[in-house]
Structures are given as structure tokens and as C-alpha cells.
Length: 112
Image (cartoon, rainbow, N blue to C red):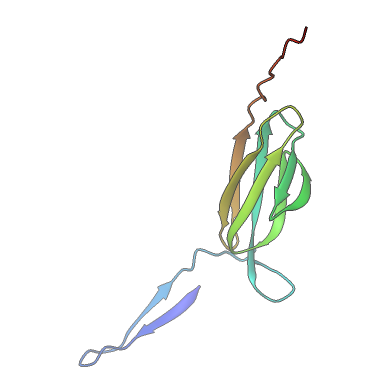
């Protein structure tokens, strides 16, 4: 909770409470910056999950301690098209991403 004091010329002081949307479980990284989390599930499961080009494991997976802001997300699995997007991470929250991977189109070539 933040205490906000507003002072306007010609007006009395107005004090009020402003809630930042963060709770007591706010996360910070080693630099003291606020962080959030990303949960990624996929169909099929056990797909490789990359955040900012770093392999974080396989789906489903929660990646914790991400800095606030946009992050590149890639989900890959052999035999399927890659899924690439960006996801915004908010302080103290877990962003969710559900991905359905599509199969690669197999092309057969006949040779004589």
C-alpha cells in the first residue's frame, strides 16, 4: 500500500490510499528490481520452452523471477512448428500462456 498526498494550489490537502496491485509476496531479483512469473502449458506437452533465447525446461513449466517487461517466448517440439510470441510480465503476478502446437506438413517426393 502506498500513501498518496495530493497538494493543489488553492485547495486543501487531500490524502488517500493507493494500492499498487502488488501484494506481500512481491518478488525482487538480486538487483532489487520487481519480478514476475510465466506459466506455459502446451499441447502436446513436453515441448521445449525458451524465454529470451534461454532454454528453461519443458512444458508445462513456471519460470520465476523474470524482470518486469516484455519477454520473447518460444515453444518447440520435434515434428511440430515452432510457436513464437512475446509476453508481458507484471510485478508480483504470474502470466499464463497456453500453446497448441501444429504438426509440420510432411511432403513426399516421388523419385523414379
